[in-house]
Image 1: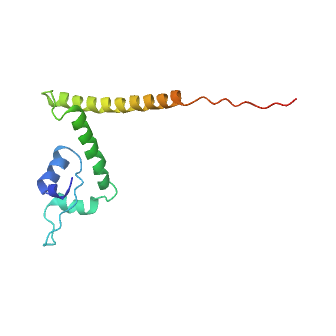
Image 2 (image 1 turned 90 degrees about the vertical axis):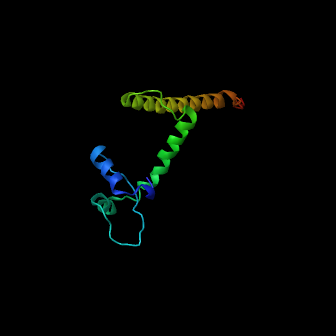
Image 3 (image 1 turned 60 degrees about the vertical axis):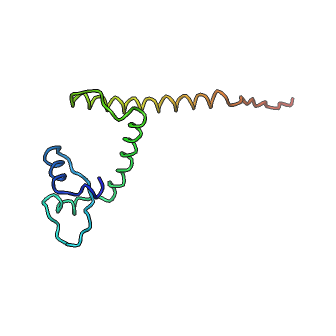
Length: 121
């Protein structure tokens, strides 16, 4: 998440309800004191190496939404999770098949080179 999501309520929700840690950089403010228990912890737990990987996941979500649509048809949460997982698996299979197909096409269209050995008796 980016700095716009830096609030104690979001940190509390992700830690207590979801059981994970939200990697959110702290907003720069005029006052130096940081309010909130989890926001104070984020000062020490924020990892500069993990945070840039956020772009990869956001790009992947964008690709999935463009290719398979934003809307989920399932009503129950459990089935919605299954639907998203299915879309990810379908995307990975599609990329694999295209890669194998292009490699096969490349190999099949290359000219066959015969090397003749000049034998002198």
